[in-house]
Image (cartoon, rainbow, N blue to C red; front, top):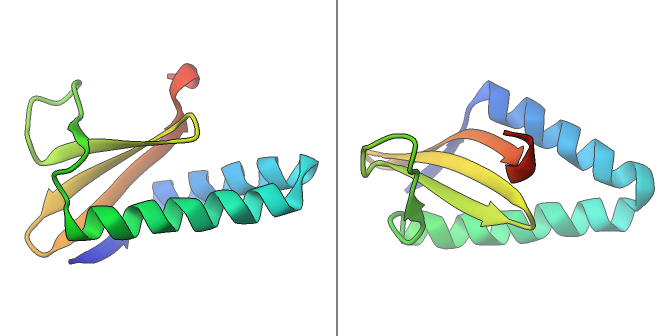
Length: 90
């Protein structure tokens, strides 16, 4: 399965990494590496994360990583990363 990041997801992820890097640059790199490792696991088992409860469809899932929620959709042969946000902000 391949991983497809939408433009809004890439922009938000970059903003999150820049924010973390303001205080602690190594923490931003660690955050990105750990997130990528989790996404690699999800690529192999796309339904391992819980369904996204706001959308009543099994294809939409959410992954929690250090207080951030990553919303993705399981499509034919691909994982589409839709959004990433701090769970307290929405």
